[in-house]
Image (spheres, rainbow, N blue to C red):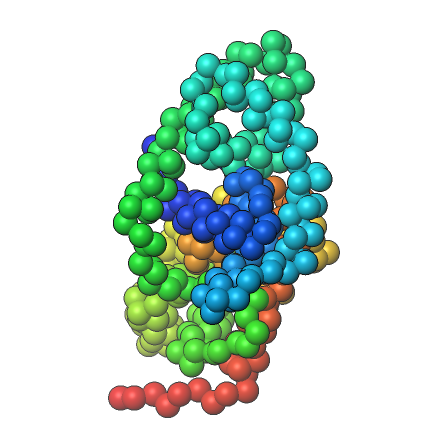
Length: 344
C-alpha cells in the first residue's frame, strides 16, 4: 500500500480496515488468531473468499455452533506468516524504538499495514532494520509522515466503531463480488453496449476508435452519453457541413478526460494483466477493464494489485477472470438478444 500525504484518507481503505478488524475478531473467536497486518494481507490477496468465510463463520456462531475456519484460509494465513512474519517482527521492534511516536498497539498495527502492504514499502523496511544507523535519516522522515497518516486512519476507524458499520453505499458499476456463481445480466446495459458499438463505427480519422474508455463514459454518464451518441448519428446522416466533425471533436474531448483520469491506473494494470494472462486486449478484456476502472471498488483493488504485484497475482487473476466472464456474457447477449423497439 502506497503511503501518501496525511490528509488523503481513502474511504475504501477505511472500509478495508473495518472489515479486517471484524475479521480478526471472527477468526479469533473460531480459534485462528492472526495479527492485524496478516489479516489485511489475507483480505487483499483473496478478498471474496475471505469475506465469504467470515460471513459463514458469523452465521455459524449466530446459530450457536462452534465456528471452524476453513483449512484453505488457515493455510493462506500460514503462508503469509511464513513469508512475511520475520520482517514484520523486526519492524515492530524497530517501531518500538523509533522517535516517531508509533508506540501504542493500534497505531503500530496500522503502521504495519502500510509498511508491510506493498513490495516497495517492504524493501524500505528491510533496509531500515538491516542498517538502522545508515538509514536513520530516511526512516525518521518517512515514519514522521506515516505517523500523521496513521493518526488519520485511526480516527476514521474509531469513528466507524462509534457509529457502527457504515451504511452500504449505493452500488457502483462493478458488483462487490468479481467472481459471482451466476451472472445476472442487466437488459439496459446490453442496450448500452449497442450504443457503444454504434458510436465506435462513427469514429473517423487516424485516431483509433475508443475501447474501454467509451464503456466507462457510458457507465459513469449514461443518459448524457447516449444522447450524445444519438446526436452524432443524426448529424452524420443529416448534419450541415462541419457539424458532425465538431460534435465528434467534443465527444473525443470527453473521452480524453476519462482517459486522463483513469490512465494512471489503467495503463499499468493492463501491463500487469498481460504478464499474468500472456495477452490482454480483446473485446471481453476491454469490457472487463472498463468494469474495473468505472468502479471505485475496482480501482481500489487494482491499486492494491499494483502495490504488491506478486502477492496479489492470484487475486488479480481470479477477479479479472470473473469480470471477463461477465463481459463475455454481455457481449454474447448483445449479439443474440433482439434490440428493444424504438419508441417515437
